[in-house]
Image (cartoon, rainbow, N blue to C red):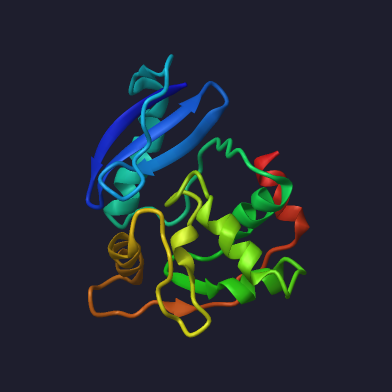
Length: 177
């Protein structure tokens, strides 16, 4: 596994991946930093495009990432993560709404669990999922960072994010195949 750490406006991010693509982003200053495993190699070269797109995102110039992604998870988790990529920039959906869009209206808790295991936050925008009442709920980087990301996408510090009816079907699953 290759990795590099990058400084961003939400703190230090650790990017991890290999020749197939980006496998993980972790918030190294947050509650769950990723520790280096034996054999990991530090290098920026394979992450240059990821870094460029993250820079553009944080500068407000990029709304959708276009990177080779290789998230590892169950079929259901990958289905949820794929659905997350359909939520438009600057908008949010609830866990229940996402479950309904996936054709599993009773699975909002399972959707929440899959969302919480998203290995590539920001790029796979799990921060765009909120509680049924619009409240901010769990986020691997912490709720302060989730708020920062939503505020960035809202366009100005005073704006409140809005909920949307983003659509997804099983045909979005091949995004990770």
